[in-house]
Length: 235
Image 1 (cartoon, rainbow, N blue to C red):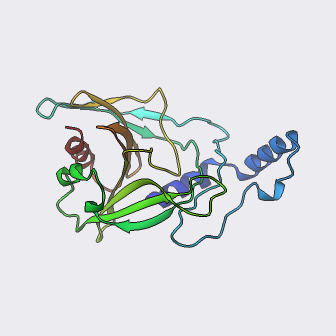
Image 2: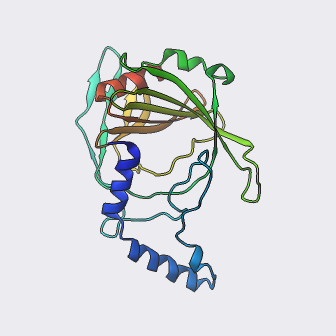
């Protein structure tokens, strides 16, 4: 199941649309804002724009937090890591952003050195699909002229195994859903702390290392392949 289908499934199973709509309307009426027709709305945009669910955080009616169930530690003395996988049992919220996606090459990225050391599974046949993600400098701007982050997509096109590494030395990469809280179990790689999550066949994590912000998400790769990827970044 692709990441998009996973979170579409979470949205349909965990979110009561009618209750959320009524809650938003009530909030707006209290503030005397006449925006009822614009609360929940899909926007038609060119294919180059990322558009996801509207910029209101929706919460599960019965459980307003993600439920995390950390795994037993995965320990390696040789490579110096202690890994806990926090399993996500329900979704916390979705948000909206739009961005202009432009294809690029690794040599156009001024801090691309770490890319040459990535441990990507041998069966991946597409390892150099780079994108530059641009956003508007403010809500009134018509131009997408601020480089928010780069994305590297690696794939096995035969079976849809995928790795997405978003990174930036200035901003935190944009994402359309959120995870993580203080109850999550923290992992260590070479004494560097980070938190790892899993939902069904997807692993994901965000962290800042060597002044670069990372946001990594995978589909259908093994737990060990995910760990090996992180170890190849965090030296």
